Each structure stands twice: as C-alpha cells, then as structure tokens.
Image: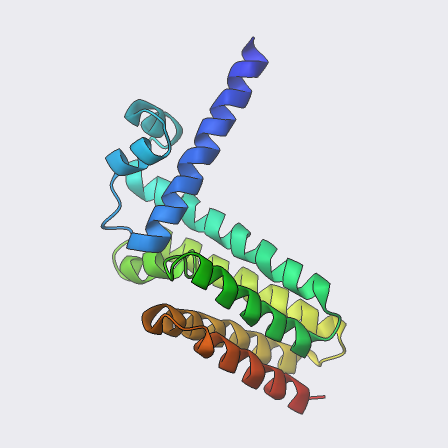
Length: 196
C-alpha cells in the first residue's frame, strides 16, 4: 500500500513539473499561476505546495530543469542519428522546425521565456536556466570533440550553435515559419565544416 502511494505521489509531482514547464514555455513565469498549474496538472493546490513548499519559484526552478533535460534528450537523439556533427545540426534544426510547426508555433525553447523574466529578479531561476544552456553547450562540444575538433574550437562552436539555435527558434516562432531554423542549420553546418 505504501509503495503504491509513493508511486502515485511521484506521478503527481512529475505531472505538476511537466505542466509547469509547458505553461512557462508558452506564457512565461509571471503569467503562469499556481491555480492554473494545479488545474491543468489535475492536482490539488495542496499537492502543489506539498511537493513544492517554496511555492512558485521552487516549482519554476524544477520546471526549468525539466526543460533542460527535455532539450538535452532532443539534442542527444539528433546527435545519435548522424555521425557527422554538421549533418547532426542540420537534422536538429529540421526536427526543431517540425516540432515547432506542429505545436502551432507555441512550443519554442522550454527555458528561454522563463529565463528572460528571471534575469535580475529571480537568481535561482536564472541559475537553473544558465545551467541548462551550459548543459546543452556541453552536449554540442562533446559531439564536436568526439569528431576530432580541438577543445577550444569545439568550445566556441558549441556556444555559437546554442546561441544560434535559440535565436532561430525565437525568430521561427515570431514569423511562424520554418525558414529561420532551416537557414540557421545550413549556415551552422558550413561553419562547422570550415573548421575541419
């Protein structure tokens, strides 16, 4: 009986985090309320406070970490499909564009909207976002170093790739077009190839 309750609680907590991540991805931190989260997660407000006694800020940090893991899995999947890092980045931008279009241009980066609102206002959320960006840069850097790129080049290219993906994804959302991501993918691939 105790084990079943624990599994149920883990399920509820995960549902709350996933719901918060999606809502903050779409509407940001300020516009996302605990009442909306509890309703959409099909959890009581009491459950939200039970799992997150620190309230909305604690929950936002966990939601950003969830977004970090989600995009990291997306990157790993794209990198596993292609041995060549340039081809992997093109595949990644193509997949991002497709997912963004399928979401009705709503589901961009799972971290950026919340991250921008947290700068200078919520250091713990800002730190979780910076940790996410660093995690993603590390995944790109590791892909490049495994492909024979020098450490300093891989480091700088990883920053450029993540920065470009973030900007292209935002531009694609605003223009409701896959073109910004497709163009970014092509040019990142050329940039990567230029260092071989």
